[in-house]
Length: 173
Image (cartoon, rainbow, N blue to C red; front, top):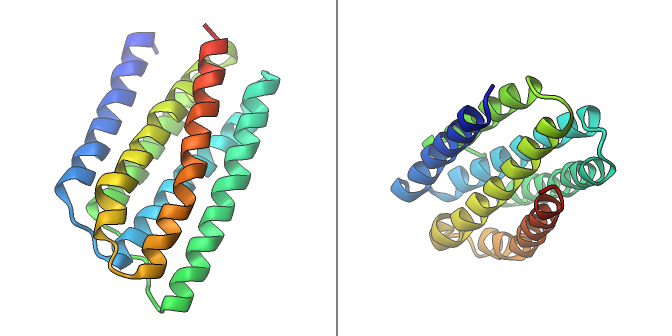
């Protein structure tokens, strides 16, 4: 796959996700579903990067993504049980899952430095998209105070992930 094709796929996938985020006003059950989907997508990509990458820094970052996003999913699962809310699929969560599947398919066709660059570039784009979704859609639409509070509390972790991914990205140039 060419660099341009790869960039176009990533851009198109995240444009779809951004459009879905912008158009929908999810309820709390859908927000819970979105949180789980967003974390699962990054866990899956991280697991692939842990296995595939030969770059120590990329592998360590991927491991951190798996650990941190698994933790957020555990928090979200515990909260929805406590609140007696069942996570629901929505256009947003479906779009995230489709984007995640497309990214995994793209990454599976790459090796070496091409893989590392594509993975890290996607992590930058992905974390920025999630932060934008938190700020513009998820937090403003969360009705339950505990759910809203959890979303606000996990935001700094996503910002830290974005900054870390940007640092790795810059070191690869």
